Image 1 (cartoon, one colour):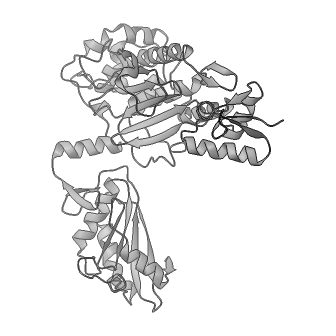
Image 2: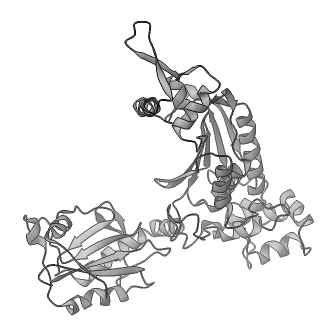
Amino acid sequence: MKERKLSEKEIIQLCERDENHFYDNKAFEIKGDKIQKIAVAFANADGGEFIIGIKDKKEEKNALNRWQGIQDIESFNFVFQNLTQLSPTIPHSYEFLKDNSDKYALRITIEKSESVHKTANNTVYIRKSAQSLPIRDPLQIQALSYSKGESSYEDTLVNSATAEDIFESEEINNFLSDYSPQSDPIDFTVNQNLVDRKTYEPRTAGILLFSQNPTPLLPKRCGIKINRYETSEEIPERTHLKKQYSIEGCLNEQIKQASDIITNIMESVQIMGTKGLEKVKYPPETIWEILVNAVIHRDYSISDDIQVLVFNNRIEIKSPGKLPGYVTIENILDARFSRNSKLVRVLNKYKNPANKDMGEGLNTAFQKMEEFRLEPPKIFEDGNYIKVVISHTSLASPEERVMEYLEINEQIKNRQAREISGVKSENVMKRHFYDLRDKGLIEPVMSKTGKKVVAWKKKN
């Protein structure tokens, strides 16, 4: 049994804490169905914690008086009884919080779950902001299941397609010509469950993998859009958009075509480096692995394409769907969870599989960026999407980049220093200049009036 002794100050801080997407508190008199409601809502969302033994702010204005403090730990047994009634079991941990008079409140921590959970009365809840809201629409519950990876849209039957869209495609014949043991299209797709075993209706996975053109059959769910913006600005303007590409076809070809287009675009991009204008170079393995990851792990139930934005100083790849199951931004390099297991498995059967290093693709992407002495990719949850940003930002410190530039160039301006170092703020860059000045490495270049610093140069 875990216990933690709290000071009066810590108790006041807890009692003053606002309820939000990840936190709730309830009075000891809470009913069992309310406990289940909060636990289910957190598990179905992003996890969170709630404390039993703190009154609501509406009930008690004074923060310290909100703390109830229960003498007998066994009085909290009803909490655990209600949690054990949930199926599937909700991953959780608990801790008793003790005040100076040895009275307790109970903190329950709920983990994000890979399953869709219901209360004992079969109601699904999800946490949004500071509320635990019910979901009753079957379509919304199914969407939650897809989002969490409990079920996959790749298994759905495509009523607008026929088995011939797979059996007679050029792609499956090319694939099977290299496949061992030898198989025909019908045997292979049935054995891999890419078509229904009884009706031969094609599944979404089969159409994505082997239809020559899945787009008419799965509109807005299976393409890659590439936009080239001729700028380094965080928020580009319409005038910065120079070219657009739409990639369609079976997934294996999409990955190859998109990778080739991105590579060709990057060959023409130049940015300011320590030696002047330089060609932008990224490790090709990084672009490939992140692109493959976006294709095979996206949520195909969401009606949108994968978006690739190519800027002068970075590449952004935006994939529909939240992180599935127990995967988080923090554990994504170590977690192993496949939302689309059929796509992952069959793509790996190609002679030269796109996902050759199964489970290690993202790790390879990060490793190669380090070998190129570039900052690691950044991964964000952006609403209902996952965004990966591959920046052309050196691992060298801004001071090192400035001194490297001044080895070749006579002087450097603030704008140039920001371009070569990746520092976005003019004032932050000034502080780097001042640090170098204080170390006796550089000195200012003054304006003609002598009142303004216009650049910096190496100190003689």
